[in-house]
Amino acid sequence: MTDARGSGGGGGRVAGVPAVRHHILTVLVENKAGVLARVAGLFSRRGYNIFSLAVAPTDDDRFSRLTIVVDVESAPLEQIVQQLDKLVNVVTISELAPSDAVQRELLLATVEAEPAARSQVIQLVGVFGGEVLDVGATRLTVMLAGPPDKLDGFEGLLETYEVVDLQRTGLVALPKIDREPPPRRRLSAVASAPVQVPAPTAG
Image 1 (cartoon, rainbow, N blue to C red):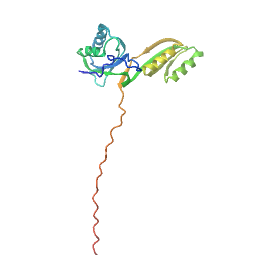
Image 2: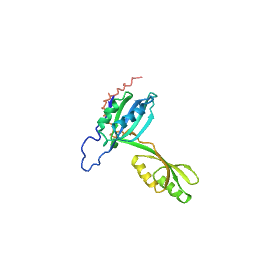
Image 3: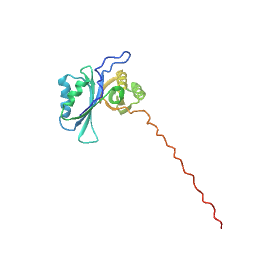
Image 4: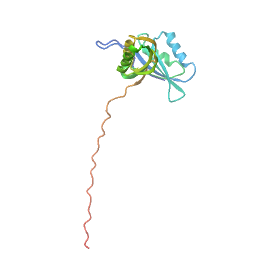
């Protein structure tokens, strides 16, 4: 049932390499009532810390996919995977190291922006590649999608203004595509037989 690769937080630290504090688990579960509550309850009972949890249906109506960002300092990753694997409704578990994953998250924020400051907020959103979704007399609702560190930076600068409300979806991730070029196929030389030209016949 389990397809977990690597231990994440179990090894020692390597000099010059920043320690990885979190890992990403993608968990395929049966699409049944109460499954999410059982997964969250497992983390709560065991004292595992969750940075974020996102749930989405798959192309098969029988299953849903959970993307869980876990704190590997709260418990060894192998232990977390083993406990998840014991849940009846869990089908597969895949572990992604942050360096091996394409990660995205969505941020929505409503900002108090008087006319004098509105252009500054719009400019900030544009610099980060975000969008203005809604505009009122004194407020803007903005959106930004990207990797978590990009959203962290944007959120920090946004706090210069009065943030009325802010929500982040939690992380979703997929494995990075292998960029190794496929091996070249060697074309075998095919010797062509000489074409026999019939001799002209006397008329």
